[in-house]
Length: 561
Image (cartoon, helix red, strand yellow):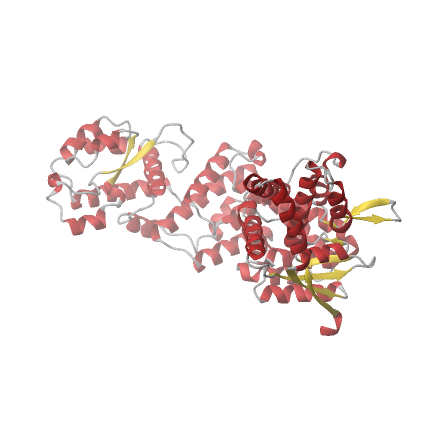
């Protein structure tokens, strides 16, 4: 592969000056944040300038030549785009000072190039399809030449924030040092970017070599995410149907971006879920290989992309109870999603996704409630890892293959993995819950069962603040001297020692004696709390155990199989 690579070491601004560079559609959007990567970049360059003009190495940039002899960026977009923003911000500062020659020099050398065939200036750096129009009209062009392009994607907001922070950086220099110093500093900064901020430029002859090098760099720890590799592979396999593949991926990303700003993490979570559905159990490390196995030609790649694009819409919905997808579904669906989010269970998401995708409205509602019961049972037993991954993955894959079509068949298919009633009750009798929101949910659901409410496992949204109260307090004062402190630690967070109270009431109860606390319990509107008012004598370990056995009986009726 060495004969296919051109090699050079030069300043990053010199690289921008020499070549017309473009980000191909198979590359990610702009992703640097102003408070992390952009801030660090500016600080590092400033430090290097002040440190006797020491060179600053910015890593390797990998390029390939397309059929029009234009260099396409395989790795290095973030650095090149941010450097272009620095240069454009310097240009804008010179514009405000009326320094026309400086402005023209920057425009001609670093920002634009005259295209005789088009009889127009073109940007020396072109970003991908999703970002370029916003980048050109909000960064590259001078203000009076721009048209209004509003940010509609996460990457647009990041570009705007990065460019704004660079301008603020320059304004701070001027405020601290004055206009004359700032002019000289910015001229020096341009020269420093041109000569001293150095990169290794690798140009390969063809896309296949670039792709191989891209993967090799990733294996050696450079910042190329597995999501990028998946996208690159699918786009490469799409061949002359690349436009179709690009549109599917763009739609997929738009759905995913509604969930979280942690782009790579949430994308990989989704891609793993998609692989689980199509292929069965899959780890994150196996995602790229699974996608490769599923898409060995053009039609397979487009098929996989089509499935993923459809799944992405549902994936954003299963994490958002307010999503419009659920408008025509029973309200149980929204409440179930809220509970699953509260419980924080992630291993079940591929199964939730498959149910949301392939079950009808009624079956989705009943199935989601079963997922809550299964999740609570696993949580009470402290079961995580392989058993859940394998079991949920098999169920999701069977739904995808239409071997499971409704909740009844799902229950039957899950019999080998879910926790039995006897095992659940036994473990619930001794369960401790240290996470307050989880303990609060358990007690609220049990309260619903005690009141004979329908769907007790579902907790509707409420504006009422409900606190969690320890009957035996965390700090044992003299009025709790009948309890051994060492034994108390093991029973503090047992569910039998926890009650629900309206906000403010638990503060009044505090670590008072049990007899004094009972006055507050008797006034409680919560039935399970109110019952404590009838307990005779001091509260101790035996009381906790007896109460928790009764709660375990309610638990069987709450989280049913």
